[in-house]
Image (cartoon, rainbow, N blue to C red):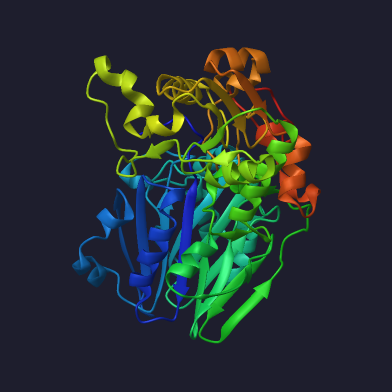
Length: 466
């Protein structure tokens, strides 16, 4: 069920040198399920060959039968959970991609989006390449296979120097695992250790689940090669200014994860505190839109002194695959996933905290729901600036004409969602709350300041070509 939020991107996990590699990869993917619910897969190695199992569906469904793990034996594995940002939501696009080429077998799992993929794909097809998927990730495999460099690392570097955009990559061969993060560091990636085994994951919460030790974050532009001889680190790409996705802190990452040098939960609470400083209001209670709005609402309540309550309860058993059976009942919409607590809301002046407004449809329904439950006033507060521009670096946001704040004033949005007042966190307030080096974040979805130029097709404004 889609509540008209930006969709998640993908999550990757890998472990090297552990006799329960596939089982632990399953658990790692389970912890990263919030990053993609369409499909998942695991590719493993026993030192001689690679094995694969992948399917559409949630991790628990795809790997729910213990017998499946007989199909992915070995002491090393990589895995992927997917939400399609580039490529259709069909079985042929499930990752990791596994191929055999002249140098042996290799599999790759990718989180991010390659913004010049169409240009490279057209070039490769003109030279005779045959693609099996519609994903941007597959071009990496073709570039890798076409390279004449002698070592695997050199072939990877040559291939990745051709692409532009966001990528966290995990490769696995019969004997090695390689992790690479793009020079801008758009997406999070971390390194851990479990006994003598090395672990790489999109977020630290996956390390926590398997009780692995968090070592550090993989640096932007870093390539980590893990083999029988140990682990080596390389920085083979030209250094550029980091552009960490700030929306990971606002919404995407799990609050118990540590990314970009900060614990997400603490950042979100600070977003709420800053929001209270900027947009105070006389009210009786503060309630979050669960689950992503909870830490910010707690911060807002602490800073404002207004009592925190759970005025909306989420039904966690409604997944993305829910199909509304008839047009006549589609108006239930948000009510299927959220239900108000009337005794908490009745007669109260309510501050509703959410992380973002995309199209405005969900916020409108939530405000009406809270008001119908008896609230005397409903004040909407958003713990990020207006989302006015699409993301092209691995988050599936709508195009600009569907983003309500791209073409409507604050007052027009307030009237549309029927709130008594509306306040967004300022751009400067967002950067202040996140802390650290303010110049190290990508905030293109709020500012339109894209760190990487790219060719665009269709109605969006043209940006510089490569």
